[in-house]
Image (cartoon, rainbow, N blue to C red; front, top):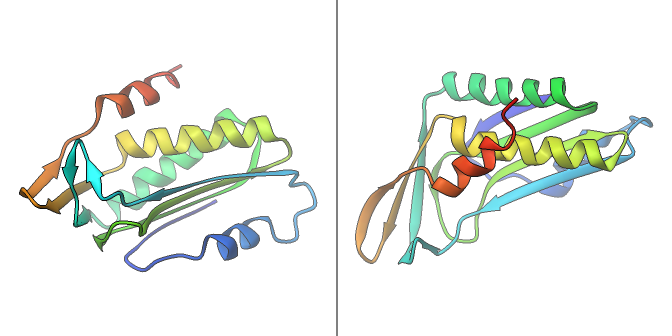
Amino acid sequence: MRVVVQEGDFDVGAELQALRQGDPRIGALASFVGLVRDVNDGSGVTEMTLEHYPGMTEKALTAIVDEAARRWAILDALVIHRVGRLLPTEQIVLVAVAGGHRGEVFAACEFIIDYLKTRAPFWKRELGSSGARWVDARQADDQAAERWRD
């Protein structure tokens, strides 16, 4: 299980290949890639900046991945989350989960991204035609995460 917070971009294909490399038990791999959009809540976005607390963020992401591993029979997982200045169409996040069967990896991947959106300590500031603004959590993200409660 690996968690990485970085400024630089990532190669999705290379990361997925490395995740499943050499493990014949893996029969399924699910992934999610989040991208920067050029619009949010009806406002144009020309760039966004993601801020975080180093150490604290990695710890929170690791706890989310560990919780997924407790809930589902997965063999490995990867979360790469970018920080810093990002432009529309750029990759923000990769969540990938490997396991023996598709049901387990789909559920774990969805759980990780839902919890990441609501529990990971990131702060997002968008810049657009109407100026800069800090982005609050979305109610839809909270509702998505709520369905995983025990």
